Length: 120
Image (cartoon, rainbow, N blue to C red; front, side, top):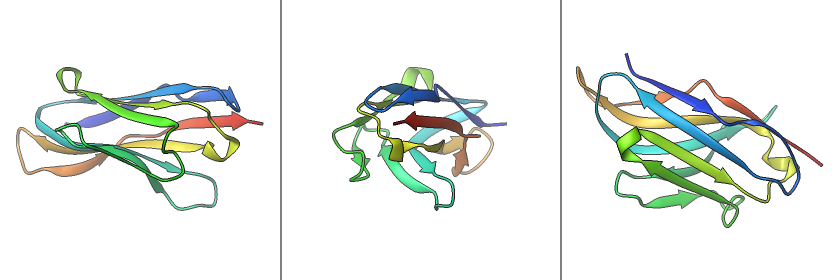
C-alpha cells in the first residue's frame, strides 16, 4: 500500500506564511514528479507547483514569487513553502505524486488534502 499524507495546513492572516508537507509511505520503488494542487469551493482543482525528481520546478502564475516547492528524496517528502498568503489562496491543498510501487507500474497518487484558510 502506497499513500501520501499531507500536513501543515491551517488558518493564517493575509501576508502570513505556512509550510505544507507531504510524505510518501509504503513499498515504493521510486518517486518521480511530485506536485501540489488546490481546490477552492466551487472551483476546479488547479495546479499550484510541481517538482521533478531532478529538482526542476514549475509554478502557477498566481503563486510565482510567493510559493516554493522543494523535496527531500531521502525522506520521500515534498514541501510547499507559502509566503505572502492572500485570501484567494484559501483552498484545500492536495499532494500528488507519480510513484512506482515495488509491486507494479507507476501511477499517480493523491493525498487526502489539507485545508488552508487565509483571512483578510
